[in-house]
Amino acid sequence: MQKLTSEKFYMARDYIYANANDIQRAWYRYHFEDGNANAFMDVLARYQHENGGFGGLSDEFEYQGSCLKCTEHAFFYIHKLNEKPSATHPVIQKMMKYVLERYIPEIGNWGAVEVPEINDGVHCRWARFRRNDITPIESEDERINQYGANEHACFAGFIAYYSEIVPEELYQKIIKYPIEHILRYWDENSPDYKKEIFDKGSPYDFEYFQWFVSCLKDKDIKEKLTAILRQNPTAFVELDFTKAETEYVHLPSDSAINSTDTVIKQLVEDSLTYRMNRQSENSMWPLGWSYGDSEGLRKLQAISDVTHTINMLITLRQHDKIEL
Image 1 (cartoon, rainbow, N blue to C red):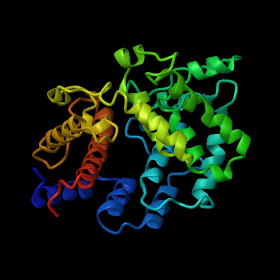
Image 2: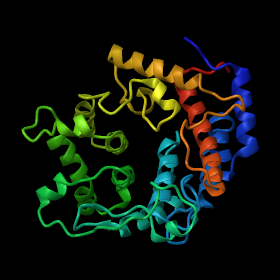
Image 3: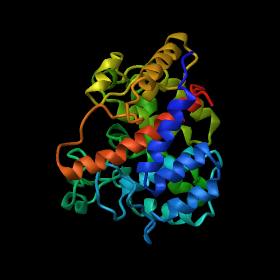
Image 4: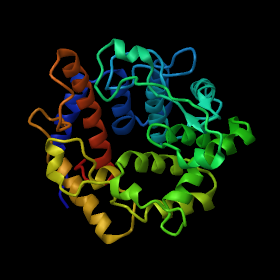
């Protein structure tokens, strides 16, 4: 099995320390140096605003104020810590208040994750405020049918992750919509199964649903939903790895759900080796596609390159593919 050499690892480390911001350095230190979750949470807390939301955590826009998108990034970090921060942690308490205040019961979900102010500064074309359609959906069944996981199911996951500080009735209502959506429309054995989800869908809902399911505490429903997601493990991944050189695509090592299936495991291994071998001459892992040509967008992409490189090292380590 091919591994990243220690020389290439240390070259990547030097690149990270030369170019990273505070949260990136803290994330690298946590995974490869001290493993101190409390120290990482102290750094993360600097990005939290008084209202409980986070700002400055997105690589796709320069706006530093609080928004749900940056709060999503904060939960990504928290969820990936080996030691789960206590529900009594001030960061968690303030974050929960922010997330619950922005939940919209009339649609069974959250609204736009971006805010209008993002459009006033440098931002990627896909990371902008468009509109916030929060038209009430009267039918419970239709709320389940229309449930959008992309950029939203993670917040339901956060609610589930820290359900002990959420009123029980509200907690059950929030998690009902993503759970029922998977049960009704993603299960091949359901009479409401929507095959078109897998024929024309994108990887985003799939990945956010994986994230949500991983946060559930009910073992039985967690196992049931995981089994459903495994029915189409490569439905949303690109099997032509070379497309990653010029396009934003999700390879099996990026999106495929953990599986004991030999074919899936080999696809993950092969795509991970492909990703590993794309380390550039300056020691980082490039996205393979461009944010844009302006100076502002190039600066954003430089930040994203550091994030991408750190996460690549973390993934390689998780699969025992670094010589250390």
